[in-house]
Amino acid sequence: MGYSPSVQVERPHSGGVFGIVAELVSRLGAAVAVDPSEGRIVCRAEEYAHLPVSMRKDAVVIEMTGERLEAALLGRHPA
Image (cartoon, rainbow, N blue to C red; front, side, top):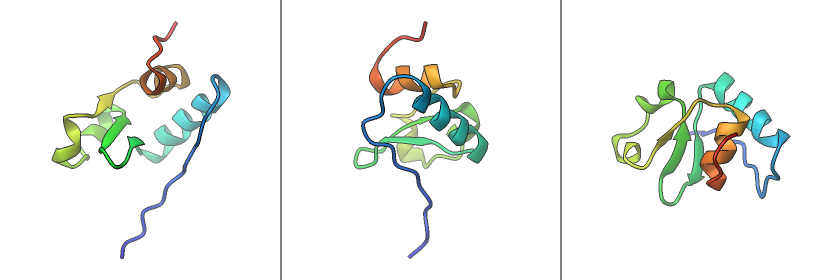
């Protein structure tokens, strides 16, 4: 079985944690799995092309900032 590194954040509060996660995701060239069982992903345009085809239709492509990530995950509009 292959190793798939991951970071999990449960019940984040508004504010700084989204900025930290967004920075980490950007530096790693990663994506955020919103609901792994459904294949929902939030990612930058750079990572979108590397997603499996089956995950692309539900992917949300954003500029990876804390504000944009929070908006994508919680349905809030960035200021």
